[in-house]
Length: 226
Image (cartoon, rainbow, N blue to C red; front, top):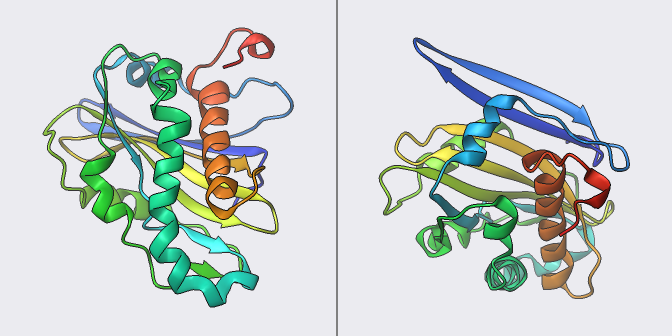
């Protein structure tokens, strides 16, 4: 797992006859702009966008003190986190507005059964991360109604009690081929009380950091608040 101040961006660029995988690691300090390849402009300009919400099926909570509650928490909290994310980012059209999409569809229900299918060892003692291959595999298994277009999904990776950080991947993909087009690992600060809001707020904060520092590429970052 990378340090919270480092963003790892993976952009897959398709040219006639070959595929180029570009891996960029950039360090964000204070309000410094995080730069990505200009090729990501095609993703920013593509419409419609089909947003599938969050897939919690791969996340691990690093919190040894709660291991005894593993069965109870894995059964109850993923749905609560989805409800929290909807309240914070969907009901107010925040995702659509900040991604600047005129045509936007929220499709969490299409992967709901997958998202709630938690791993048995949901709460663990140590840190945890998963590779890009796990993301590719997860997306290929989605049963989606749309047959073509641009998809977006959040894959929470690790809720780390010691760091008070929620780690996740923000993933854009081609719905028809299920090819990962742009995947960025980010972390967010967890600043609320209660298990639902605490880790849910970390996901929201990480998503905001991605949009502000990577997706939107603001000309004047210090004034680009939302």
